[in-house]
Length: 246
Image 1 (cartoon, rainbow, N blue to C red):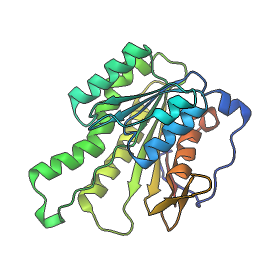
Image 2 (tube, rainbow, N blue to C red):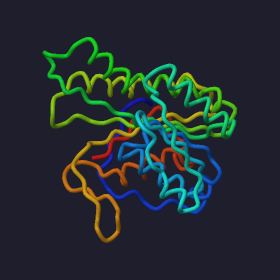
Image 3 (cartoon, rainbow, N blue to C red):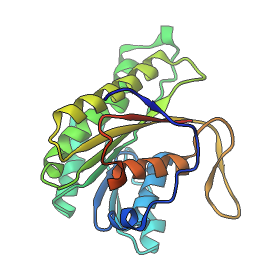
């Protein structure tokens, strides 16, 4: 079934002990650890025992707080929106671990140009950084994942409900189509799904440090929990699905 599934925005339930323990020693790759959702996913996976590699397009960002908590988190400068950058990331994962269990594609790029002013360069940047990064990185690490018993891929899609951005919206629709196509084409041990989120303004609680939802958007921490659900064995019956939050 390839129909999009829509859920009301609720706090995801706490995972079972079995689900939490299953992330121990799993190798996870986050395509954009600098993004709010990517960073939240990296934090939650690392705290649950995964070996996390987070990609940064420009300068390597800081995952020092994860290392200080005793986790194995590594930042890498690589641009997955290019064939060379995706291949570099895959080579680093292979060098460090020789395998990959979990992949989260969450790189996003919104063009600043209006529809009538989009140039060929802006068009290519938008499509490559959004749809291209998912395709290139998934393709680059496929060999590291296919031999694993339960490889999981989650693609993060940003919904464009409030502002009309046709080019960005087209790139996100392409990610959903690619999710469904790869779910059907990949071996049966794979599970490939995506999470559709509505982005909104958020703030951090001064008392807890958690990211809070302040308008109709989905907070990164909430989105990350849904990503982890799809990476867990509890989502075994889902493949090629687009789960909408918000």
